[in-house]
Image (cartoon, rainbow, N blue to C red; front, side):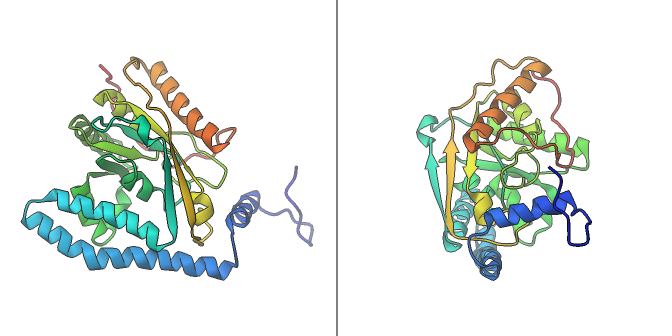
Length: 287
């Protein structure tokens, strides 16, 4: 079906049409209200960082209590969601072993996604994030103290080294959350998964937990510039064993298995052809 024509007979840009459809599908009220709530959500995030982060970081560093910084970050993630009117409903947490490290792999629709992935799994968490976050005032300083590993997507060698660090921390018992699409997807779509998180899990010998984050695109969808109160449903699926992965074909099958389970839970039938910026994969050695 061709894109609709304007009054002058010129076809609209299909990309613009897709973006407009995404915005209209996520809107829950007047645009100006959504814009104000979007601004409020970032004001709250900034206030939490500016008021609480400096003293917590200072005390944690001076007293050599990194746990203080981690627990504050967990508290901050939860309260950012609460103060912006977002609740998180978690299902499937009973499927996990409390003392087992996991790689939690989730879809990525929204700026909201990292907070439930970090704060609601019930495990001590680290995150894999893009290096641009290191430039954020205060946040960039604190990332290293809460096991957030920054990936330089433009430099393969640096990305590989970062993934090696994350893998070592996995082996030490810290779980990691990853959104392997590499960027936020439009509502109703999913991008092909990158393999870095899967290499990490295989090399560390830990299971992967597929997670479907539902409704975050409705509450703060990509490109809408709006935010709305509501509930994110975080569905944690049974852990996927990685010990059988011995070859590149096995790894591809693992990626497909995990992505298919998340797509099925979200009701997405096929991958988008759009790809995120290419990033490095981890080393190929899986012995």
